[in-house]
Amino acid sequence: MNIEKTDTPHHYTITIVMGTYNGEKYIAEQIDSIIHQTYQDWCLLIRDDGSTDGTVAIIKAYAQKNANIFLLQDRLGNVGFNRNFMTLIEQADSPYISICDQDDVWLPNKLEKSLHALQAIEIPTNIPALVHSDAFLVDSDLNRITDKWIGHRGTIDGFNGVSFANSVQGASLMFNQALKKIALTTPIQAPYDYHLSLLSSLKGKRFFINESLLYYRQHSHNAIGGMPADSKINGRFYFNQLINLIKSLVTSLDYERLNPTLKHCFQAYKIIKGNYSQGSISESQTKPLAEYLYIFEGNNIFKKLYFFIKNRYGFSSKKDRLIFLFLIISGRNLSDPNQWK
Image (cartoon, rainbow, N blue to C red; front, top):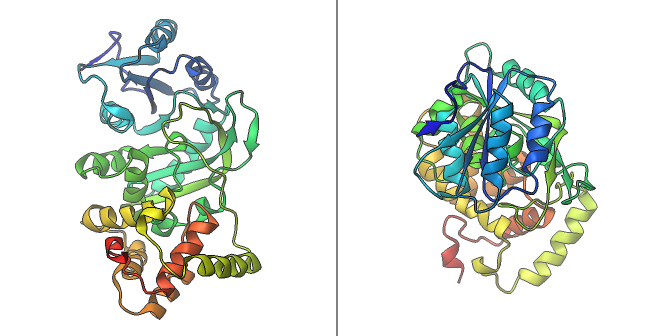
């Protein structure tokens, strides 16, 4: 594995890691937004995942003109976005690591605000820590679709904010070396951003900057697309929608009919129980984790409802929340949806 240039990026305070693949259309705009950050003690480490367009040529041109931009070269070939980013994270030795997508645009103060927030929560013992922000959802020409992508669910603290739906946008996050160490020694069974968000929420500290610090570009080539933020629950809306859903679902409900975002809730339960709940858990998150597991595994429907309503978990949409509530009320076996048939 080789990092182009005789210099090394290790002496910078922040290493920004960017995984690229056929990104020639937008990558220059993203790199320019990094170059113009108000905080300047950073290096940009890029690994290309086998682009067939002009992406690598653009990266090399920036690296030749900027001493703090590096191209990581290896013989791994095309490994997919998840392993691409984890390979970059493994090579990042700066005290702080920031993730960057190839097609977004950062606001000038993104690094500065993220670093100050991260340094504030990792003290006094340098605990595994992560910060993330909201984003402007924009079209391919950076025209705003919505001012908030994550929205209210990002403000839900700790494990409850990421257990049912990941509120951590990978391209917005920054984390410290203490979290990197855990991330590399824990088997990864989820997308890299969910991997990091679960570990920080259960074993360290996660903080949401309730401000949009980047433009999250939506186009046909997104690896993972966006969706509007889930706003706060309105009581009347909640009740009316629940009645409508019960009418339509009371006869039967097949797991295969669920939305992908709702299926994620059941997939997440399996990996959280089998992998991320193992080992040392932060004292403040022991009870939330136990209550979450009871919702899937417990026998008392009223107790499940109590935990579900009390904890106000973050979901990708109101509809997902309401359907899951119906599943609890109807007594479905939430630990094994295959038994619904």
